[in-house]
Amino acid sequence: MKNLSLLVLSYALFAVQGIAAPGDGNSRSQLSLNGEWHFVMDQYDASRGLARGDRPWGKNDRDEYSIDDAPTLHVPGDWNHQREDLKFYEGTIWYGRHFDLKPEGDRRYIIRFGGVSYLANVYVNGKEAVSHEGSFTQFQADITDLVKEGDNYIAVRVNNRREKDRIPAMLFDWFNYGGITRDVTLITLPSRYIKDWFIQLDKHRSDLIHASAVLSDPVAGETIRIDIPELKKTLTLTTDEAGKVQADIPVKRLTRWCPANPKLYSVEISTAADKVVDEIGFRNIEVRGTQVLLNGEPVFLKGISIHEEIAAELRRACTRQDAEMLLNEAQALGVNMIRLAHYQQSEYMVRGAERRGIMIWQEIPVWQAIDFANPQTQEKAIRMLQETITRDKNRCADCFWGIANETRNTPERNRFLARLLQVGKDLDTTRLFVAAFDLAYFDRKEDKFVMHDDFYQNLDLVGINKYMGWYEGWPKAPKDIQWDVCPDKPLLISEFGGEAKYGIRGQEDVAGSWSEDFQARLYRMNLEMFANIRNLVGISPWILYDFRSPTRLHQSLQNGFNRKGLVGDKGDRKQAWYIIHDWYETR
Ligand code: GCU
Figure 1 (cartoon, protein in one colour):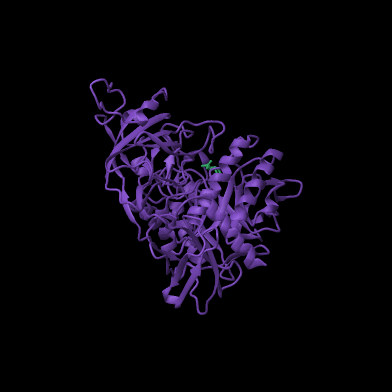
Figure 2: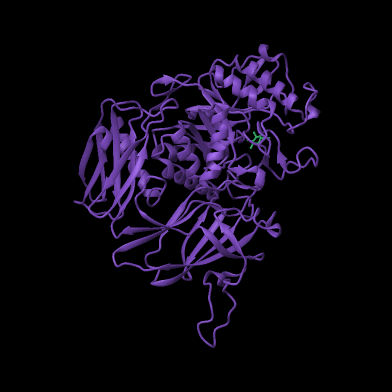
């Protein structure tokens, strides 16, 4: 029954979105539309005519909607760091560019955006191709019927204004970058192509792979081949009336992916007209009691939280090089897990972590005060989770799907998260579902940390954000503090730490010193306390780098930066970096 449930579940994945990510392993022909795009600031959000990019075609045509003579913004990249007059801009910007095409009769053309912050309306030759809400998940559209021979024009209206019913909403502790912040790609495909696939080890077994794939059209009787050459596995399958195939692949001597050996297998999915190659790692991630098991063995999660930002350049991280820099610093710290806070991050981060053997907690930005009572907001969160899972379903590094951060224990929130969790579990049973809570507190009567929450029992693993020594004083010596928080669940300290400005030294016992020494001592004391937590399965200090946040206003100490980083915004490691590094070495 389990196998059937997983295979049925994998079908649900295909319903959500088009073809799988181009990523590294694909063999599709892809035209990058990265580069310089003209732009205009549409402050009153009033100029729908810009969708057409009209240029005067005849003597009677007004020339009011072409922006070919406007300045340019680089794509991918947020607009805020590219121009002084956009540094704090929140609103609508129109992007536009031309591209040449020589359409071939039986080809299909898919435009794919890795991420646009926050709302995007995409027009090709004046007609709307797709709209999308959410800064951090990819989307695409089949524009075959909109393109033409020769010159084509694509316009994108981008709006990053904060709104109460958006996700995240009005207030959040990171910078609200706007723009086309990830790659834009035009993918050319045969008229009937391989739309998606999901190939993963059974959740509980090391000798059985579940494979499923689907064509772009619901046709029966077509042949799809699945090859895993290194395992000497070749399957020739026939599609059902939905254009789908599925199979169970018994395997022997499979090398399972893990931090010590991040083994990836080349997997080829092909038809007579199409072929894709993906690099897939096979592993089991599950919970037993209060332990997390990777490939059947208990694993302690030596984590770090990371925002998708290059702080030194005041910008969103958006390239492979950016991801490599962030991952190299995390790897140097000695991690085996990263919490990609607080939103789905680029494929470069995910595939880079996969190659390094680093597990990932990936989440959607349901951050604190979300409009939980709003049905539209619920649908947005559901779609963001579906898109997050759909893009990364074949990425073995993704082990944890996070559905919320620091939300309040209210009936609206619990209904919202229960529905969200059900959608997630219907899509994917191969991973663990988690959320981060800031509701644990020290109960003086009971003389221990406790947490009262009506939702956490539904999760596989519970994250606790707790800033002892920073937002809260120590009730007693750390070594004497007992925890009785979610005692029947694996517990990850998903955030802890305190602020320090790189270069300030001394006064280790003075919170107002903002010294590295104070932060280092705070880390030592927290690590001492964590030793008492019986169901502790890992920690993820907040955070790798100082990061930008408009809520951090102290002029000399913060100046728009949250300084909880183990590394300063200019890349300098603080004392606390070495505390964590040395502690991870002992684990
Ligand atoms: C919260 C929140 C983070 C925030 C951190 C802080 O736990 O999850 O996004 O940056 O606290 O206050 O520094």
